[in-house]
Length: 283
Length: 87
Image 1 (cartoon, each protein chain N blue to C red):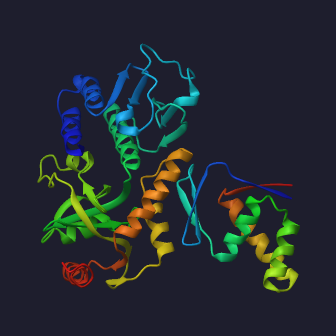
Image 2 (cartoon, rainbow over the protein chains, first blue to last red; image 1 turned 90 degrees about the vertical axis):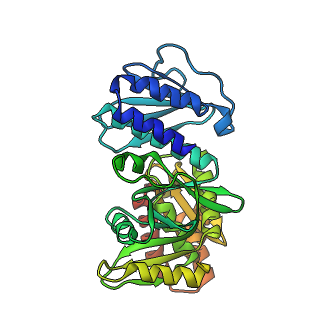
Image 3 (cartoon, chains in turn yellow, blue; image 1 turned 120 degrees about the vertical axis):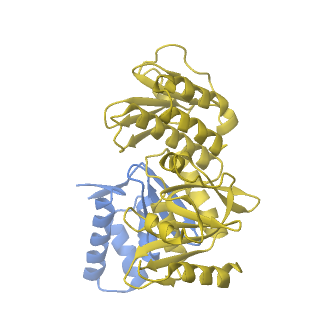
């Protein structure tokens, strides 16, 4: 699903920009949502197929801002573009901090939001993390901006394959979590190598911290939960989604082993990661 | 002084540890056992003096220390917008 969306978004951004609205509408329709756009509003209505919520039906024609606040999600962006996600009986306000002065970027942020909501609804988590894989084993590096997510993924890229260097979606399946490719890294690497399209089982999570010496340390269950939750995709969500996200995070923490990784660029990170995984996951 | 729990919080207890998600700021908070106890008392709408009394009984420490620690904790909750303090 995510790769198919990704391919359409690549078209959205790099091909004829006049078709952007039509492509976005197609994405929405193809993935269980319906979309109406005019010059003032961008509206995404998500169907019950994806969200287990009854759909009361999309509005036709222009939408007034306060037409039905009890079931409207509002996205306010920095340049005052306004998007609504209609969601019966649920209300949330989402602020996107990205620079949305370019309409394409606004559309991408909307797609990111859509993916995040779908991900949460499906029992998953979306994290600020980089991720790599080899031999059907994926490893994620979770951390704040500047913690070295991209750096470590680059350092590992000699023996590992990159999945994403900043944002990942983890979805549960058969008692495990799988990393799904998102459109956002594909956009960055449109002219480079594309990451593998199929989901890969997440075998380990490292919480990143830059250091002068590389060291892998255990982490308490409390800290693990706090640090993973603290690095989920940042936006304001409803109480309903807050609860689901907290449950999903607990499941992720119970399912996937987590350690703290203090790392230094000067050490052989490949060897340390490989040894640690061999000792702790048998790989 | 009265305290009101902020409205935009999602709370989850995992293995007796409380985790609080402040949804509007996407910040996540957790407390130790004493913090969790105070938080539960705040949820029960106990007043500052009631909480102080309960802590005095529980910990048998000088009242002054309890009051200082409690004030500091409440201030930190307020600073993180987990509670709203009103005079």
